[in-house]
Length: 444
Image (cartoon, rainbow, N blue to C red; front, side, top):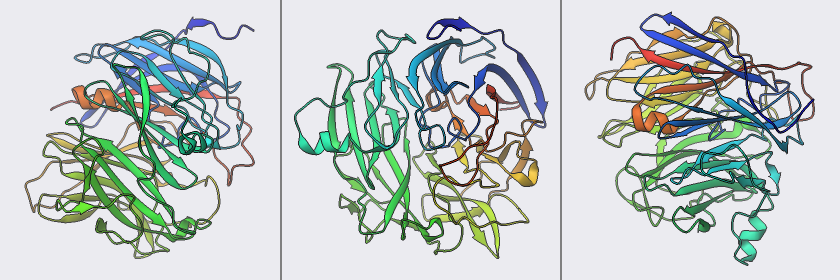
């Protein structure tokens, strides 16, 4: 067995038609599937791209970090295989599905990678050259002798990269239970601390967020509060704010100033959802062409847990029930949960709202709800379409957001994974195929 060598896989590229959409499927490689660590929705990002180059990352069956690269043409169908590099970096906590890989390309083409993080010392490296799959040695992100920065890099969870229009990056992560933001200067090739505490943990309460960086670099963030850190059922309410000046100041949806760090008492409430209603954390958010936010989530109404879309139409917040499920479940537990539905991913363009999920009621396949954009005050009506014929187990949706924002092309990271309760055990699985699904509307 040879490790750490560049290989090109024999691959399978297939196309299917499902209703109003065409699906192109590309086999990438066999990935670790004993937990959902490769397919958690808070992987920001599992896939990324810049210009005509796309990268993908996952843990293989030996728990090594694999980087894949291929050339793409965003204006046409892409069936090119990925060239894969098995790196020397390793998933130490294989039973813990929180320890995801996050990747992003900066404006110069250097790949930034964070991996194997759950309340642990920062594991961060970059490619040695632009658009290379060969990675540097692990290194500090911020090298200035600042005690607060050094301390926070010792306890990192939920690492997320976001690329700005000038090629700079934001790096967002949780330090203990507080939200921290760094910024990478693409010209000077160094990191600096932007905000020590954006959302602040208070006592036993903690925030869980989702972020969308708009095409004009507006920083949109929504979140909820977990009132009891040991109970997922204590998740409560949906909040929203944004920054239009690169995190120098924040405002709520009405343009009123928001004080940072944000604490429990604030003026950012988007939608009230009480405790014990299966309100899920760490979902997704995006904005439309006018900057109006759309927040995907799920919670229970009338004892049934359904998918919801909380959005602002320019006048007020609205709540639309996306699904029509018939069953519920209990979101209680500590650590990663084997939930019968995935957290949702929402995308919005000029024509459609796309809403990706996995639901046991539909055979745990990749499912997309979609609705045509409607005029103001006209109720959205969602249709549903399954996009695979096979179960994806504990999969949650991850999208190439760079390609989506630049060309409104949908490329999904898909792998069948499995999950048991907690982060101490896993399922005996020899590995499953990692795939990239390209979703194409037949009529735009």
